[in-house]
Image 1 (cartoon, rainbow, N blue to C red):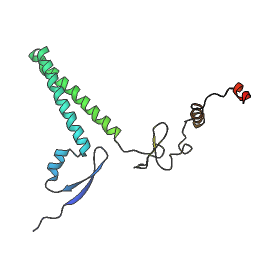
Image 2: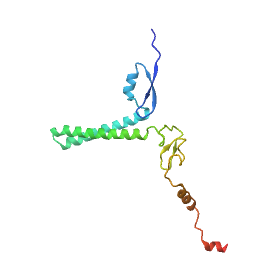
Image 3: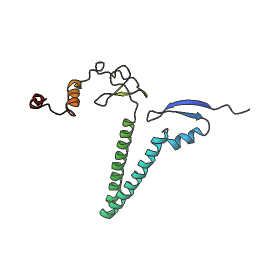
Image 4: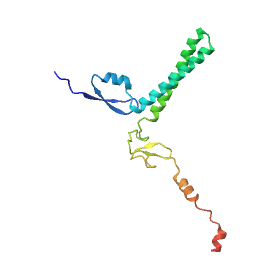
Length: 162
């Protein structure tokens, strides 16, 4: 009997990118190698792991220099725990920055046609107008400032000369 054709399985990546993985025998090795991450997140994760390894080695060297044999293991574990917590916080910050962009008013995905408010909030095509999302930005004063900035002050004495 011949092998069945590979089926595609749609999975949601941890960073919000949809990826297609082939459900074949190699899928398990591919998942463990990529940890179900997109290529950008995978390279960033590898860099963070290298930094984590450097920090762990440096902290363990400092621990060996400073402490006795009984305290070494406790301090090494504490240093590794602090470094792993730091690594986890950096990963969560990257994921939150690169997460799905949603309209602030209706929470729908905005995709490529994203409009930003003057405060930087993302809005979709319907809510990007200032009257649709209750924007507190004062457009009148901003317009007056834009007009007044390049124009010099008009002096009455000069008008009388003309």
